Image: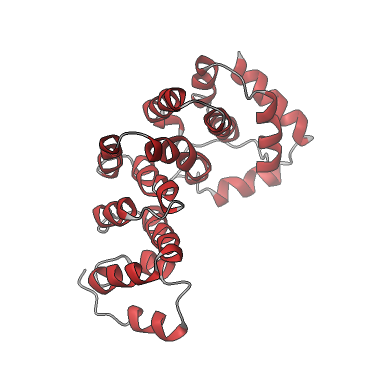
Length: 242
């Protein structure tokens, strides 16, 4: 099976990762009971090694990628997401659509923040940027998902629009997620607001003037990282409404 072959290739390329490395990744990604990725399994492979092996398998079929995304091993699923990015970057618009639809139909395997962040901007965001505007409604649908990773996909995918100075989706999705209970969503919201602010700081401040009292503290801190100390203090002093 392709998933077993890839796992073996990853371990071989990494030159036998140590148990300590695996244990460290389990702690870092909180795969312990009660953690956000409880039950995830790690080989202890670094991202540069994953990317190197992904290049070898970059032309595999969607059937093979589906098999990879079903793997219990975190690094194998991340490799699958990286392959989807590689295939997207050289694809026609029609093929990008197919890859985006495939990705969104297999989010069960896009189930940790690093796998989301490695892939969704290019596979989802970059396709929607080129697609008919109505298709972008999928972002709002994802933002309402019960699945935390789909909500993070919705937020981080707007990064593709931000890079083209199109900020509406970012502010819309951030507002949808403003009362989300998950810290990893708060971080994604704040991160994308900060990126939006790099393109239009005035608009970010207008947004914060209206929503700072409702934003989760973590999201607000991320959003204002590039502000002056005085500006950060002013926003952090806003009376909380939640």
